[in-house]
Structure formats: structure tokens, C-alpha cells
Image 1: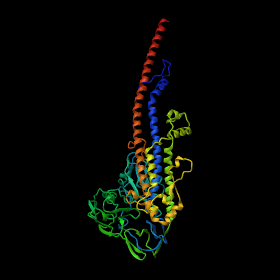
Image 2 (image 1 turned 180 degrees about the horizontal axis):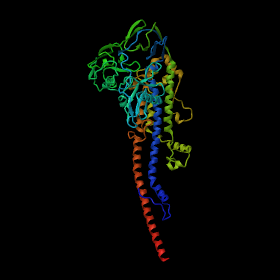
Image 3 (image 1 turned 30 degrees about the horizontal axis):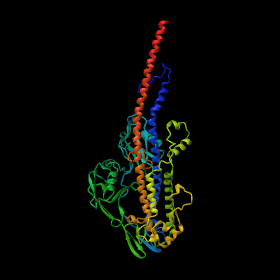
Image 4 (image 1 turned 90 degrees about the horizontal axis):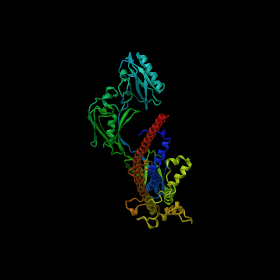
Length: 603
């Protein structure tokens, strides 16, 4: 950057002159900035439509399934068994008895697998704590980590215990973590038990200036079993109640899947490997009961946990070295006929029974007509469709005014917030009036309103047949209401009474053939496709403006790049102006000096 000299010799306000010159120079960049702002406003308008379209799609996702539009409801005499109608069926009554629930194959280990202690190994009598050398301890109690500082001193064992207890109480509060001293002058930490008797985890972490070594502790040493410690560390710290010789081994599951481990493996890494594998089981640790469990991922008698261990891992964590257990099927009687099913949902004749408990006696499930459910769901469709269509209509019908351009920073500085908001609203009005995406979206969705679905009786194969039509013209053209729909509830109820299955198929058919696709299924699919087009055009809601994977984002990115390049050129141009004025000032100063000298010579 050039040295900038004010007009001391010329008397000119050089900063003002250069600023005025640069205003003219910056006009092209200002135009680019305004163009970028227009793109940004357009992007936000598209994203607004995207939000409304997503809400419509989500509503369709709730309504496009056959089970949502059966017009039937199930009531149960007990919460032990609940039921839902998943296809159109007649009114009926059923009796169901549950003798056994389906269950996972589960191999449970013994409790108390971890030794509860956080014990140091050093005789701390006469320990010297030096500031900045070994005066800090990082302690994590439950989910709270604190660093305590031990004042520098040479301590007796009891004085050191007392000082650490003081610092611990200050960090975590009294009676949360007790610092103890045994007959060998070794420090230990004992957490206080919760009301349920559970003692929380306590872990020491290695940090700069750590006092752990002086106190006889190692990094990541903990009170309870620490799943992130290596098998060799757990063994050296005596953290397992069962003997474990840390060495390599392999867990082999019934389907041939294997998981290898060695002395450097951690219990967490072994569990993660098992859970990611194709073994079809989940290995977990219950910290409350301090035990390990291996469980099948699905229920049913066909599911098994079949595992063997070539090393000592399973025995060390309280599980048998070799075992095979099976799951259970749900069993019972439906209307006097035995059933057996691998899950706790049993479906029969369009009714899904959810088995929650073994029943002491038979539970009665009644199936009855429920036209209100379909009527209410259709009303949800009408509301969601009309709200979405109103926004699309509004954006397409707005007229753009060329009188309003995005405000410059200087213009905003001269206006209040309300006036700025009004102006910017004028600027964005009409930006989407020629949008082919919105026009195609509107036409695509409206075409479904008049579609006749093949494969259904002609009496009920279109929305008009069940009381859904576009709103009648009222004599006054209102752009935002064009294409909205309205429901003749009486006609819908009549259709449901006459042929509920046809109504269900009209709305929810999903057989993979376009001509037979139900209206709600088609609405969902097209809304999903429109959202994809909107994302390609303007990006996702809350995405960045300069997303080059989108059409508008690419334009914004290109403009940002041009403005950056232009700003570099403008900076050089400004420096050049100052350089020229500096030369002028220096020349005037030199001339003034010469005149002053001559005047002095002539007296």
C-alpha cells in the first residue's frame, strides 16, 4: 500500500477527492453486488417454496399407505394386546390369547465383572509436589471433568490425602468423591453411592504437570471398568474380577463370522467390531449391573447366539467360553386357532395384533367402521395442498417492478429498518413470476386432481367421484386461490359407505404401474420430485448461498469471484490515485520551498 499524504501543500482535501473518484470506479462492482443480491433473494424465495412443498410431501407420506385409509378401527379390551387395521376389511370381533411373547436369543454374563477400585500403587509419605511439574490432577466424575491443583509442598501421607480431599470437594462438592489412605500409605478414590446404590465412574486422565505418577496412578485408570482401556491395561490394573491373560484370540459365531482381538484391543473396540460384523448379534455392557450381554438382532426361535472363544476374553468378562442359546417365538390362540410367530406383531386377515404381554385370559378385539378417520385424513390433504398451492400461485402471479433495485450499503445507512424491509419486499416481488419450475410443479400436481385410476370401478376412480374438486369460480378472480380444492364431505361419506375398498385403492394404490397409482401416492412422488428440482435450482433450506452444485448458487459464486477480483483492481486503482496526488504534493512542496528561498534572498 502506498504512503498517503494529505493536501498540506496544495490545501486540497485529497481523501475526499479520491473517495469521489472511487465512487465512480466502484459503480460496476455495485452493479454486480446488486445482481448478487437479486440472486440471493430469488434463492430464498425458492427455498420458501421448498419448505412448503416439503410440508405437503410429509403430509402425503403420512397418508399414502393403505393402512392409513382403511376406514376401519380396532378396539381392544386390554392393553395386553393392541390392534390396528392395515387393509380394508369388514366389521368383526376376535378373541386372542397370548401364551408366550417372542424374545431375542440372549447370552448374559455374570454381574460384577469389574473390580471396583481406583487405587494408587505408590507410598505417598514424603511426596514432594512442585508447582508446574507435578501439581495437577484431571478427574472425571460421571460426566464432569475437573482439573485440581495441589499446592507445592513436601507432604506427609495424611496431609497429602487431606489436601487432595480439600481440592476435590472444592471441584465437585462435598461427599461426592472420597480420598482415602490405606495402611501402606497408598491413595485411593471412592465415589459416593447414588440413592439406588450405584457408584458412578471415576477416571484419572494424564495431562501436563500431572501428579498421577507421584501418586502411583496411570493414565485412564478408573474406578469402574473402563471400556476404552486395552486388555493389557485392564489386567495390569486388576480391573477384572475374573482372570484374563491378555493375548490374541478369535470370537467365532455360528454363521462363521469371526472377530479377532489382541492385548492392545479395548472392550469397546471388540464390541464395536462384533456389532458391525455379519454375526447378527449385538454385544453390550450394562454398567449398572456390571455385566456383558450378547443378543440376537431379531426375535424368534430361529435366532441364535452361538459363539466360541479361542482366547480368554469371554471368560474374563463373565461369559462362557462357548455357548449356544436360542430366541423364542410368540405363541397363543386367535379365535381358538393356535399361532406361532417370530415377532410380537401377528397379522391375520388385514388386522395387525401387537402382543404386549402374556395374557391371563382371552382379549377381545372388535373391528368397526370408522369413516371419520378417512374424512379427517382427506381434510389434512386438502389443507396441505391448498397451503402449498397458495404460495406457488402467489409467487407466479406477482408482477415485478423495475423501479426497485437492491439497496446499496450507503442507501441502507440512510434508511430505517422498516423502510429497508418495505423496499426489499418490493425488490423480491415478482422474482419467480416466470419460474418454469413452479409452473411445471403446479401443472404436475393439478393433473393428478383429474386423473382416473385404472383397475378400480368406474364409479369411484377419480377424486371428483368421492367429493374432491377444484374450488368453484365465485365471480372474482383471486390469483392465489387458483387450483385450490374443496371437499364435499357428504359425497365422500357416501362413497365410503358404498365401497370403502375402492376409495382406499383410489388414494393409496402402489403397484408400480403409473396408470394404477393412487392419488396420494402420486402426490407424494411428484412432491418429492419437485423438491429435487428446487434443490438443484436453489439448494437446500438453510444451505449456503454460494453452493456451486446448485444453479443459483453457481451464479452467486461466480459473482463473488468477480467482485473479489474487481476489489483487488479497485484497491490498486485507489493506490494509484494516492500515488499521483502524492507526487503532486511533493512537487508543490518543493516549489513552495524554492519560492520561500528566493523570497528570503531578495529580502
